[in-house]
Length: 225
Image (tube, rainbow, N blue to C red; front, top):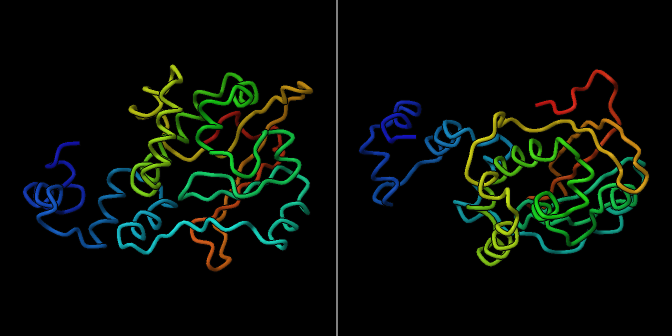
């Protein structure tokens, strides 16, 4: 997007945008949110990006407590907790480990892009789903993830043939993916799932989100955005 077009969308002169890009002028929070909106950054990532810029975002690397682990194990459907700053799974219940092969310590982005099990799980929808999720996560990977973790992640993912397209191009739909058809590679059982995610508010759990898959009714499209 050219500076003039971005400026028009957020109400700033192209010269002002240029000065901001060169760190010659500060981008105040109100305008920052407008810029993120104009660049189609997903709303759930905006707060994390603003917090990171202000130096208020710290990765909580502690292990989940017993209450948190019991809470997700009490749910029979696949559930995982994700540290969005590090891009790593904090915890996953037994159902999630069985179906998705997600467990504590696994990089969610490597699992999406480079894990053969995930390709089998998502089948012909793999590319569409992964492209949309990587596009949505790119601002967090670029701006929030620690440098060493980001470099390691990009090194691993860049070995996947599709990575260049997944990382550098805008998908046909850049909206959040809310559903998918999954085929368990072990049992070959196929089922449509809806996906929900919510930010966990356990202080000081900064940047922890809980994701859950729920078997969906027949009205759910195979990939709905």
